[in-house]
Length: 401
Image (cartoon, rainbow, N blue to C red; front, side, top):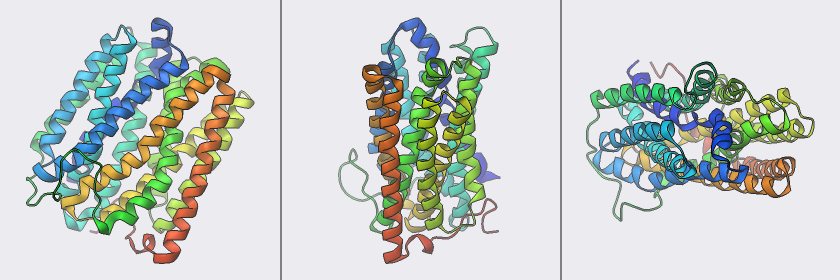
């Protein structure tokens, strides 16, 4: 139980991460910006996240989890205030930047904190709790925002007021967690740098990124441009529909981790890559055929691809990296995933402005599907040589006990 309580701050911060998704159409209407600007605003979130990943993992491994997590949650609460009062694209972009910083710090230090609380004997349960909290929070945010904005006054205010309350509870949980300062640091060198992965974990990070990166890039497209696809091409402008689409996507990402937990990690990663490929095929078909059900299938497949890539990577990292380097290894995997998740949807947004949303979507899907196939090939080649993935233990939600 303590492991899942420690995962609550991860979930709470990730609720904020995607809460703006169903509200973009409102801001587009009131502030008057294009699909390209919308994806640029989303890219501000990724930029903040990547910037935090460059330092949060190192700092967390050196001075402890709480000194990173508590300021991160405070920044997330400030982002809620900015979202609720945004009257310009600049304020909206700043709010997304702060949210990204909070998420980047949490995905490094927060996931490592869950492992610290669990202890060496329950590392498998900790990895599953961290990964499930991340994707469940990411999916709950847009559903909550969609329902609240559609049914209550103040559609861009009430969702973030609720988010702020959730974050306040997460702050209290972190403050009470039994987290000690690390006995040893994460190695020599400057603190602001690309995370340096312990040699024992480099193969784990490589395999995780190979599948996680295409998966999270595909879900980022659904988050950034999914509401526009629904409204402009498919005629579904209801914010509950947009929020539910994102929720279903991340619910699939959560559920698939439990469904495949007894498979070998090589199989999990391979199936995850193929799921992303199938999701991109469905995405193109949904746009070309103007089908909301096909878009929902695409979202489920994309979420499953992200979930399996993240789950497999975290399993390998947890099994191979010592606790004093764990946050930095988590940061490295997430940098590898979130970097293309920022660049490719941004490019797709501006391409959609120039050539139309169907063309932008098709080109994006082709690039991501190719990357996912390449990831599956990497998993096959590396594991055939060293069988590294199969050596990792299989996760169980109940832990070792």
